[in-house]
Image (cartoon, rainbow, N blue to C red; front, side):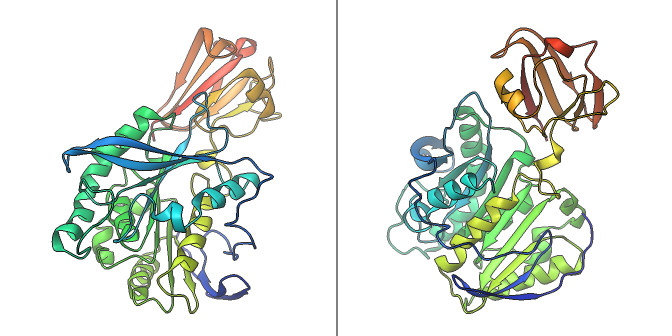
Length: 381
């Protein structure tokens, strides 16, 4: 990851008040009016509450899942794990943070890749609603032990139940307060599992900055680290400490302070709005890793189709992406990706599979060429 110099920019926003932002990838503008409101004229996602078994809690637990509009098992989706605060549960975000409205509006504006958002109970306990003293040491410790549950129970469950892409670049994690600390601890601590990490008003459960990333070279695999907090929040020193450490070590990240804001939704809802736009994309704002690109010419030249992310593409969907029938003659495949081309539409008939451990160009003549009618793309990164 490139070392960059950060420059503070002071902006005025009618919605959020003043923002102090130190951008890495692009200027961070305030959300537009109505970004978190329901819009009846656009497609809408839907909530599900499903159960998985927690080996840590020794019980079945509920998790809330937000599916994008027109979710289909014929497509594959990336996944954002969105975590609540110390007094929250699987309903904290949906009851207060308007994630359905925020995501629907981003999709309608073509500002975010359709994704699945998972909102679990971030305590490794069998209760869905926190009871008693939420600061009890056992309760606080359960937020730490949730890491094992997340990695070994919840993620495998989600990836077996839903049509999702697998691999680190297909998973993001973020959260508010205690969930923000979890996101930093779990996300940065498991670079083979998560590539996109965000924290909104991270709580004191956050590890010290130098302990979050013992090997600073691991950040070369981190396309997005997001930190935000209110300047009137008593926890703002945590965000500042991490920002200073990352800045001193040349780690590219986005850092946003909301002037005058406290420990509340005026920080957390914009956090989701900004973070969701910046995940599962490449540095130039296109789809991550540039995806699979088909070329009209056999020597990897001429016209190209759109960058294709992991998923299943029928003949009609390929045409809509600029890859019409009997058109492609060569293809570029990112490292660790697999492309299976089918002779018939809807993934049937003879097939040809190309896979590579390094970015690679292939001429299609020996394989599919004009017989390619549908494609399945998978990423193991």
